[in-house]
Length: 189
Image (cartoon, rainbow, N blue to C red; front, side, top):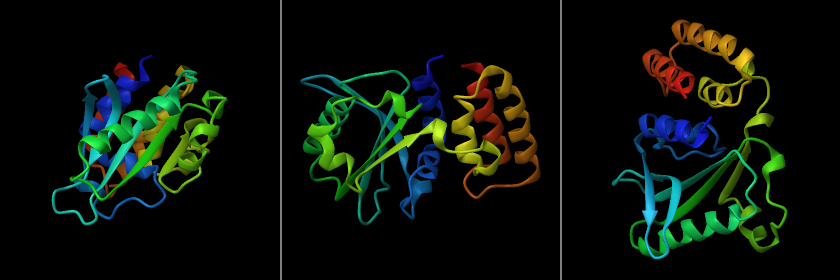
C-alpha cells in the first residue's frame, strides 16, 4: 500500500487533518491549504507543505513528512528540504513547524545526533501512528489516520465504526460526507 499517496489524497482534500496531530495547532488551522512542493537545484520533494492563509499573523508554514519504511537519511532530507524551502521563500513566513508522521518508532533513523537540536525543539513534532492509542478513544481525525495502518481484518470493522460515528455526530472540522469520502479514499488505496 502506498501510504504517502493516501496521505497526499487526504491532506489535499482536508488539510486541517494534519493539525489533529499537533499539540498547539494554529487558531486558523481550517484556512491552511496543502501543496506538494518540488524544490529545484537539487530537486527535493516535500511530502506536504501547509501554507498559512494570507491574512495570518504570524505566518507559520508547516512541513509534513510521512514515513512508512526505514530511511536512514530521513532527517537529513527532511531538514534540507524544509530549510531550503524557507530560504527560497524567506520573506513569506514568520516561522515554521515540522510534523514527521512515522508508522512506528522502529522507523526512526539510528543517527539523530546531527539534528538533535531541531528534533528536541518545539518546532518539530514526531508522531508514531501505532502509539496513538485505542482508535475508539481518539477524535475522528486521528481515527482516520489510524485506519491507514489497521490490519485488513480490523480495517473493515474500524471503517464501519467510523461511518456509524460520523452519522451520529458532526465534528467541528469534518462533515459526515467528508469523513465517508476519506474512508473511501483509504479503502481504495
